[in-house]
Length: 334
Image (tube, rainbow, N blue to C red; front, side, top):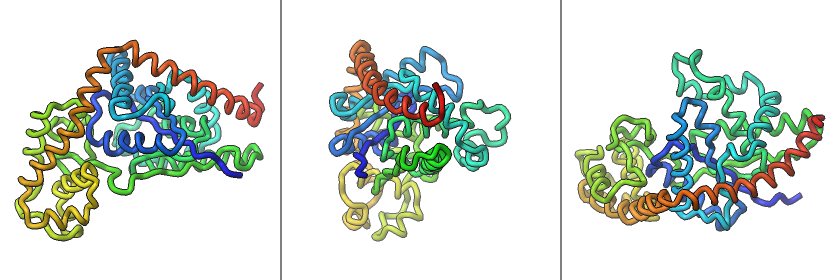
């Protein structure tokens, strides 16, 4: 049986998305909508696994939606909605909570990384949120999921849960096993201040990241201050990889310019990083600033953004309910 390619992915509404979100997710989302049926979700239920100030959360949901559109997602080609608007996500998550095993969740490294030694104070939602992620994907029977390398373990859990459900309820192939789509060139954009850490909104220094709403002047300042290396650019990848901050800058340059990294290193070898930074800043300004300006414009039209979410939720609801009806029958629910 040939299963039509269906892509699902979600982005947490944390507000003020950055270059890592753009290169690691949004840019890839735009390309995928050209060749597959795509469902893109603002995963607001995932966001509340840690406390969110309600007014700020609402604004962040709208801003993430605006970022989707500003980056190039087309509501006519892709389904765009917020997770909590389709109750099937929560319903299926509960069913899958009863299929998933505690031992599987205990192996999830992201939970350990986030809570450290304070796991007793963490919310139950944060612990079981990989099951909700599985529900997000399986609710639509998605076949492919674009993920960063740090989320691959959660996708593997989704596959384990799908397999167990299919076996438990004697329905082979009911849930397809979702395949990861990890961008070949760049799946992790690192901090401009520490090349061993992922670029993140949570890092204290704003100079660690390029925000999508940064001005041209802000981008120039951040790239100028970004850590690199005192030695000239080496002539081979293995040498560059030993210098994480320098490698990060060239990796970002490669992705933005669509120049193969090996070719870029060959072209840049022997140059000082100051020259690379000037060109990189120009690239960022040309590609990121238009996105930021469009986000600001869209945020001025809340009615339009709410309409996109409402229309997307209606389309998602139809697909979700069709699958949920079959899932309830498989489980024995009336």
